[in-house]
Image (cartoon, rainbow, N blue to C red; front, side, top):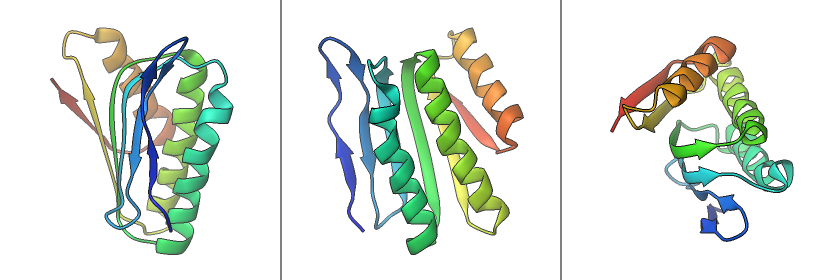
Length: 127
């Protein structure tokens, strides 16, 4: 299985930096996510996580360091978190660490909503 690397960009839209490591299971999404076609961008990430949990079946850690994401990005992030929840419920080892600006009350509330929606334990890490 190959690693997935995407260099972030701040041109017309904000594309997050992605680093998914197939050997370690450490998956990081950072920067800002404000895309024209969110589904097209996030589908390879969702597919990568799905392949990892079905073939590698190792521990996986999702590290999110997004300072901003739009509503359509939120849905795709939820899809990834739901995959991880299902994997954890099937016995997989999952850790989710979400780094956020401690002064960003909206982001903290979004993380709390993800915890409620998915049932996953998400470690909130204030910066």
